Length: 208
Length: 92
Image (tube, rainbow over all chains, first blue to last red; front, side, top):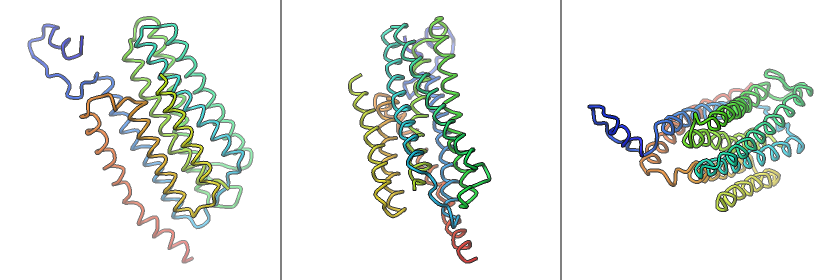
């Protein structure tokens, strides 16, 4: 039974109109969040571009090793989108065990992404990089831009892994249904797609 | 599921093209334009297929996307000032 039919069937006096978007409220809420979050990321990336254009000596510090790490991270994140899709399909088919398996795999890939990311960060800290320090002698804003943008994305990935864990536990206990997994999937794909802008702009544009 | 595997492989191929372009030593503006175009293609494919917008009501698409793109275009008001700053730093 659809949400609108339920609204009419519950015996309330006020007859509510069906959603013009024909999607559930939680999904619409997630879309509104995604739009606002896309604007947040865009602001960060525009800010980075602004500082880069406004700096005389920006430089291109990333060696191929860093780029290779970024490529592996990208492939890991894209693979996690595929496992998330498999999890959603399994929930739609009512296959709880299979859905849990795919959700665990998605969380694992998200964790691998976070570990690779943090490894790169600590390598950079070891080389003297910081929010306000640039060991190559270039613009000091580089560190602030890089760590802010990638840090914001990393926070989203870690939050996504935690959210998936909560959704999976709730789904297995019967507290959450397919739509919860689908809504979490929307968030996960969004985080993946944001990386499709972060990787070329923050890594490839700074490749030596 | 097969079509989704194809889409994800396609996205991986685009990432590969981006990396190859990076090491072609193109002028910065050309590289930036190429990478942004490819990223937009990836985002569009991802939103339409992975996030299932293609299969939702068209109203969702027409509500969400023009408004988001409008906001993103408005953010570009910062660029003239960025170029002004670049000219100021060059004049030092």
